[in-house]
Figure 1 (cartoon, helix red, strand yellow):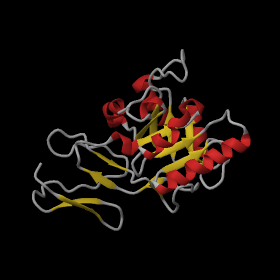
Figure 2: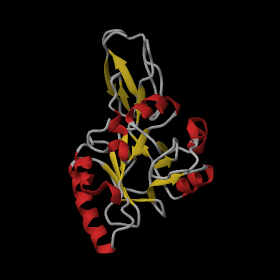
Figure 3: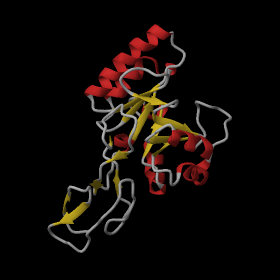
Length: 238
Protein backbone atom coordinates (compact mmCIF):
# COMPACT_ATOMS: atom_id res chain seq x y z
CA UNK A 1 0.00 0.00 0.00
CA UNK A 2 1.40 3.40 -0.93
CA UNK A 3 2.36 5.75 1.89
CA UNK A 4 -0.53 7.67 3.35
CA UNK A 5 -0.94 10.21 6.10
CA UNK A 6 -3.63 9.61 8.71
CA UNK A 7 -5.69 11.90 10.87
CA UNK A 8 -8.82 11.79 12.98
CA UNK A 9 -11.57 14.33 12.42
CA UNK A 10 -13.79 15.84 15.11
CA UNK A 11 -16.20 12.92 15.22
CA UNK A 12 -13.49 10.31 15.61
CA UNK A 13 -13.36 9.09 12.00
CA UNK A 14 -10.01 7.89 10.75
CA UNK A 15 -9.25 9.18 7.28
CA UNK A 16 -6.39 8.48 4.93
CA UNK A 17 -5.02 11.08 2.63
CA UNK A 18 -2.01 12.07 0.53
CA UNK A 19 -0.45 9.63 -1.91
CA UNK A 20 -2.65 6.70 -2.83
CA UNK A 21 -6.24 7.63 -1.91
CA UNK A 22 -7.97 4.51 -3.12
CA UNK A 23 -8.92 3.74 0.49
CA UNK A 24 -11.07 6.05 2.62
CA UNK A 25 -12.01 4.44 5.90
CA UNK A 26 -14.68 4.93 8.52
CA UNK A 27 -13.86 2.38 11.19
CA UNK A 28 -15.17 2.11 14.77
CA UNK A 29 -12.86 1.65 17.73
CA UNK A 30 -11.92 -1.98 18.20
CA UNK A 31 -12.55 -2.93 14.55
CA UNK A 32 -10.00 -5.15 12.82
CA UNK A 33 -9.62 -4.77 9.10
CA UNK A 34 -7.06 -5.57 6.45
CA UNK A 35 -5.40 -2.40 5.20
CA UNK A 36 -3.78 -2.98 1.85
CA UNK A 37 -1.97 -6.19 0.95
CA UNK A 38 -1.39 -8.53 3.87
CA UNK A 39 -4.08 -6.91 6.04
CA UNK A 40 -4.57 -7.52 9.70
CA UNK A 41 -3.88 -4.04 11.06
CA UNK A 42 -6.07 -2.88 13.90
CA UNK A 43 -8.12 0.21 14.60
CA UNK A 44 -8.42 0.32 18.32
CA UNK A 45 -9.15 2.24 21.45
CA UNK A 46 -6.63 4.91 22.27
CA UNK A 47 -6.83 3.95 25.93
CA UNK A 48 -9.31 6.60 27.01
CA UNK A 49 -12.87 6.30 28.19
CA UNK A 50 -15.56 8.68 27.04
CA UNK A 51 -15.91 11.58 29.40
CA UNK A 52 -13.43 10.39 32.02
CA UNK A 53 -9.76 9.53 32.41
CA UNK A 54 -8.10 6.71 34.27
CA UNK A 55 -10.20 5.61 37.21
CA UNK A 56 -13.55 6.83 35.81
CA UNK A 57 -16.54 4.52 36.05
CA UNK A 58 -19.45 5.59 33.91
CA UNK A 59 -18.37 5.45 30.27
CA UNK A 60 -16.94 3.10 27.72
CA UNK A 61 -13.44 3.32 26.36
CA UNK A 62 -13.22 5.33 23.15
CA UNK A 63 -10.85 7.12 20.85
CA UNK A 64 -9.96 5.99 17.37
CA UNK A 65 -6.38 5.40 16.34
CA UNK A 66 -5.43 3.88 12.98
CA UNK A 67 -2.28 1.85 13.48
CA UNK A 68 -0.61 1.10 10.14
CA UNK A 69 2.52 -0.29 11.76
CA UNK A 70 2.80 -3.98 10.90
CA UNK A 71 5.32 -4.45 13.73
CA UNK A 72 2.65 -3.75 16.36
CA UNK A 73 4.11 -3.91 19.87
CA UNK A 74 2.06 -6.28 22.05
CA UNK A 75 3.17 -4.50 25.23
CA UNK A 76 1.17 -1.41 24.26
CA UNK A 77 -1.94 -3.58 24.68
CA UNK A 78 -0.84 -5.53 27.75
CA UNK A 79 -2.17 -5.58 31.33
CA UNK A 80 0.03 -6.78 34.18
CA UNK A 81 -1.92 -8.79 36.77
CA UNK A 82 -0.12 -8.30 40.07
CA UNK A 83 0.19 -10.85 42.86
CA UNK A 84 2.56 -11.79 45.65
CA UNK A 85 4.68 -14.23 43.68
CA UNK A 86 6.00 -11.41 41.48
CA UNK A 87 7.99 -10.27 44.50
CA UNK A 88 10.70 -7.67 43.89
CA UNK A 89 10.12 -7.82 40.12
CA UNK A 90 6.84 -5.89 40.45
CA UNK A 91 8.10 -2.32 40.05
CA UNK A 92 10.62 -3.20 37.29
CA UNK A 93 7.81 -4.98 35.43
CA UNK A 94 5.62 -1.87 35.64
CA UNK A 95 8.49 0.35 34.49
CA UNK A 96 8.89 -1.91 31.45
CA UNK A 97 5.32 -1.24 30.31
CA UNK A 98 4.85 1.48 27.68
CA UNK A 99 2.24 4.25 27.98
CA UNK A 100 -1.23 2.92 27.24
CA UNK A 101 -0.64 -0.48 28.82
CA UNK A 102 -2.36 -1.36 32.10
CA UNK A 103 -1.99 -2.74 35.60
CA UNK A 104 -4.56 -4.67 37.63
CA UNK A 105 -3.49 -4.45 41.26
CA UNK A 106 -4.42 -7.51 43.30
CA UNK A 107 -1.94 -8.74 45.95
CA UNK A 108 -4.84 -10.23 47.89
CA UNK A 109 -2.69 -11.99 50.48
CA UNK A 110 -0.91 -8.99 51.98
CA UNK A 111 -1.92 -7.49 55.33
CA UNK A 112 -4.19 -4.50 54.82
CA UNK A 113 -1.68 -1.77 55.71
CA UNK A 114 1.13 -3.31 53.69
CA UNK A 115 -1.16 -3.81 50.72
CA UNK A 116 -2.29 -0.20 50.84
CA UNK A 117 1.29 1.10 50.95
CA UNK A 118 2.30 -1.07 48.01
CA UNK A 119 -0.77 0.05 46.07
CA UNK A 120 0.15 3.71 46.54
CA UNK A 121 3.60 3.01 45.10
CA UNK A 122 2.09 1.16 42.14
CA UNK A 123 -0.51 3.87 41.52
CA UNK A 124 2.11 6.60 41.59
CA UNK A 125 4.35 4.73 39.14
CA UNK A 126 1.46 3.83 36.84
CA UNK A 127 0.28 7.43 36.75
CA UNK A 128 3.78 8.68 35.96
CA UNK A 129 4.07 6.19 33.11
CA UNK A 130 0.58 6.99 31.76
CA UNK A 131 -0.72 3.47 32.34
CA UNK A 132 -4.28 2.39 32.94
CA UNK A 133 -4.83 1.00 36.41
CA UNK A 134 -7.58 -0.77 38.30
CA UNK A 135 -7.51 -2.40 41.71
CA UNK A 136 -9.40 -5.14 43.50
CA UNK A 137 -10.89 -4.29 46.86
CA UNK A 138 -12.01 -0.69 46.57
CA UNK A 139 -8.68 1.12 46.75
CA UNK A 140 -8.73 4.91 46.29
CA UNK A 141 -8.18 6.93 43.15
CA UNK A 142 -8.60 4.19 40.53
CA UNK A 143 -11.35 2.12 38.99
CA UNK A 144 -12.29 -1.16 40.58
CA UNK A 145 -11.41 -4.62 39.32
CA UNK A 146 -14.70 -6.42 39.82
CA UNK A 147 -17.37 -5.34 42.26
CA UNK A 148 -19.59 -2.32 41.76
CA UNK A 149 -18.64 0.53 39.44
CA UNK A 150 -15.93 -1.59 37.85
CA UNK A 151 -13.38 -0.42 35.33
CA UNK A 152 -12.19 -3.98 34.67
CA UNK A 153 -14.01 -7.24 35.38
CA UNK A 154 -13.24 -10.95 35.18
CA UNK A 155 -15.26 -12.90 32.60
CA UNK A 156 -14.89 -16.67 32.93
CA UNK A 157 -18.19 -17.22 31.14
CA UNK A 158 -20.96 -15.26 29.44
CA UNK A 159 -22.94 -14.77 32.64
CA UNK A 160 -19.97 -13.20 34.41
CA UNK A 161 -19.28 -11.01 31.38
CA UNK A 162 -22.84 -9.65 31.50
CA UNK A 163 -22.44 -9.04 35.23
CA UNK A 164 -19.33 -7.01 34.44
CA UNK A 165 -21.20 -4.90 31.91
CA UNK A 166 -23.94 -4.19 34.44
CA UNK A 167 -21.23 -3.06 36.87
CA UNK A 168 -20.03 -0.56 34.28
CA UNK A 169 -16.83 -2.33 33.23
CA UNK A 170 -15.04 -0.95 30.19
CA UNK A 171 -12.77 -4.01 29.94
CA UNK A 172 -13.69 -7.69 30.27
CA UNK A 173 -10.83 -10.05 31.15
CA UNK A 174 -11.79 -13.29 29.41
CA UNK A 175 -10.06 -16.28 31.00
CA UNK A 176 -8.51 -18.74 30.97
CA UNK A 177 -8.00 -18.65 27.21
CA UNK A 178 -5.10 -21.12 27.46
CA UNK A 179 -3.80 -23.36 30.25
CA UNK A 180 -2.11 -21.27 32.92
CA UNK A 181 0.40 -21.91 35.68
CA UNK A 182 -1.64 -19.65 37.97
CA UNK A 183 -4.52 -22.17 37.99
CA UNK A 184 -3.05 -25.61 37.31
CA UNK A 185 -5.64 -28.13 36.21
CA UNK A 186 -8.26 -25.52 35.32
CA UNK A 187 -9.96 -26.17 31.99
CA UNK A 188 -8.98 -23.61 29.36
CA UNK A 189 -11.70 -22.00 27.26
CA UNK A 190 -9.77 -22.17 24.03
CA UNK A 191 -9.97 -19.38 21.49
CA UNK A 192 -13.37 -20.31 20.01
CA UNK A 193 -15.21 -20.33 23.35
CA UNK A 194 -13.29 -17.30 24.63
CA UNK A 195 -14.45 -15.23 21.67
CA UNK A 196 -18.09 -15.91 22.53
CA UNK A 197 -17.78 -14.91 26.19
CA UNK A 198 -17.61 -11.17 25.57
CA UNK A 199 -18.83 -10.79 22.00
CA UNK A 200 -21.25 -7.95 21.31
CA UNK A 201 -21.29 -6.48 24.82
CA UNK A 202 -19.69 -3.13 23.96
CA UNK A 203 -16.61 -3.50 26.18
CA UNK A 204 -12.98 -4.08 25.37
CA UNK A 205 -11.97 -7.74 25.58
CA UNK A 206 -8.68 -8.73 27.19
CA UNK A 207 -7.36 -12.28 26.80
CA UNK A 208 -6.00 -13.76 30.04
CA UNK A 209 -4.58 -17.18 30.86
CA UNK A 210 -1.39 -18.57 29.37
CA UNK A 211 -0.95 -15.41 27.34
CA UNK A 212 2.19 -14.05 25.73
CA UNK A 213 2.67 -11.21 23.29
CA UNK A 214 3.06 -13.70 20.44
CA UNK A 215 -0.21 -15.42 21.32
CA UNK A 216 -2.05 -12.10 21.42
CA UNK A 217 -0.75 -11.21 17.96
CA UNK A 218 -2.12 -14.53 16.74
CA UNK A 219 -5.64 -14.09 18.22
CA UNK A 220 -6.24 -10.32 18.16
CA UNK A 221 -8.05 -10.66 14.83
CA UNK A 222 -10.87 -12.37 16.74
CA UNK A 223 -11.70 -9.21 18.65
CA UNK A 224 -9.28 -9.24 21.58
CA UNK A 225 -8.30 -5.64 22.24
CA UNK A 226 -5.53 -6.57 24.67
CA UNK A 227 -3.96 -9.33 26.70
CA UNK A 228 -3.05 -9.82 30.34
CA UNK A 229 -0.44 -11.89 32.10
CA UNK A 230 1.83 -12.33 35.10
CA UNK A 231 4.72 -14.47 33.88
CA UNK A 232 4.41 -13.22 30.31
CA UNK A 233 5.16 -9.66 31.40
CA UNK A 234 8.10 -10.25 33.68
CA UNK A 235 11.29 -8.36 32.72
CA UNK A 236 13.10 -10.15 29.94
CA UNK A 237 9.97 -11.86 28.58
CA UNK A 238 8.39 -10.98 25.23
